[in-house]
Image (tube, rainbow, N blue to C red; front, side):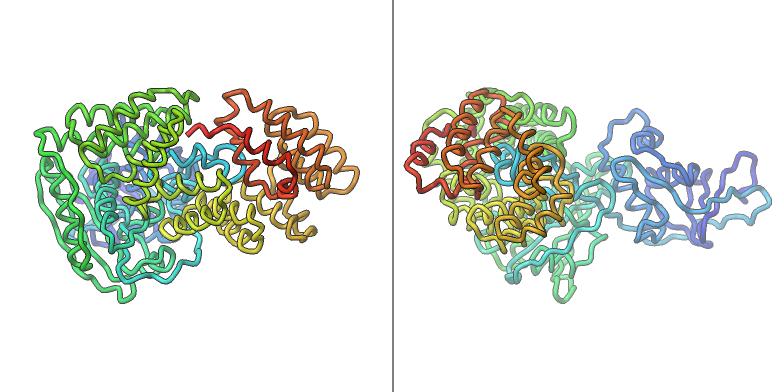
Length: 630
């Protein structure tokens, strides 16, 4: 075949030739291997060079009516970039939240062009994956938002703003202990390129098993999944995550056949501690997860705790429903929570001994109650039943204990809640969900130093989480530790520039530390709204300050009245501050408000209100604060 037959489509760009008819990418006269779907993605982009190709249009062109997640497209894009050597994204350019532009000068090759070479075997390029999208913010104030946000994940983290390859901001990490590890996202090398959710889920399950080892520090999913197998500088991963070891892996699933290749790397020496390929049938997926985790633990000379596992004939099928549910739970797109709930329900129907699926189901019920349905009673009894089923199977599940504690708080059973909290803390001293819940609880009760300690531990195990760094900064601000607060808030801002509340907290920190000119300069970054009006009332020139205060005083919502109370307290008008806080509490009676603004927590943490705490009215006010929803 010469490539000169009628209808034969070939294109040239740079040193590459793209042969559409034979599905070949050549660099000079040598073939560059691409999986079929990655080739189709490249071909579609090349045939539309120079124009924006929307994500959805690209997925429709390549996959048609087949249902796949955006992760499948993301992996194809990364594989294409790897094949083209497009490390800096100059050839395949990402437009955040929109699509891609192929920037190369593409020339169609006619029948007189030089013939293409026959393919020459070359090693398969290992693609890399991309981090998940950042979650959306809730409520006001970084730590105030945690009342609803921390139930959203077993600490999924707030990482990067967009899909596509993104530069992870460099933040200092503590000295890594020798027995520490990060599990990067596994690659999907499956022929159809549609198993990204499964590759992610397998890596997460291995991470979970390793995290149970008392002698091993394991970086949380949120931060470790910011890096991708085959596409990450191991030394950079080590420096940012504070680990000595990195686990990379790839998954190839073809029907019932599974091939998983993993390699354990010592970050300092870049040496492979070991690498291994596991060939299994899909029905042995649970055994595979445990085998990989056990081999890693043995290589690191730590003990892997043995958790109960199901022997149900449907265990593998249930695990697939569970992993897809986890994928949807983390992704959190429109309709994903309801779909995750259905997948978890299917998992426990197939395998009633699947303890983690029962726990995940309770979590999905709880998050939907707060995040979508705004109904704290949504499936409340079913939440408890699911958690009790999980703990009957595996009483060591820290996540189940902490979710059960939250259930008892909602139902007013404080004694049972305290027991469950204590058990969760004992079992999950490094579990992000446990630490986040306890930090929120301690801060809401006014135990700031205890909350700060918990928040610092969260940052150690999930150092690239903008949410956790922002929460730590907010707690330090509440404690009057302005220099440290500013450091953490600016790190949070570097990790996620779109987090609007961070700008407000930075301006407040500068204001209260006496850096008024810097605070005024930073005020320009604060989004329009009542929080900005509050700062303008305190920082702007007299005319602008009066106008801002008038706008704020017109706002009779719980939030508006609370912000007015802060202004009054800062100006020394203590009587007015107490009056406005009382009015804010009355406005807070509306149950729907409580899902977006946790007024009791805001009052407890407000650095502006410290001047009120010596007044006898403060104890009366604090005693009137309503308990949290969860």
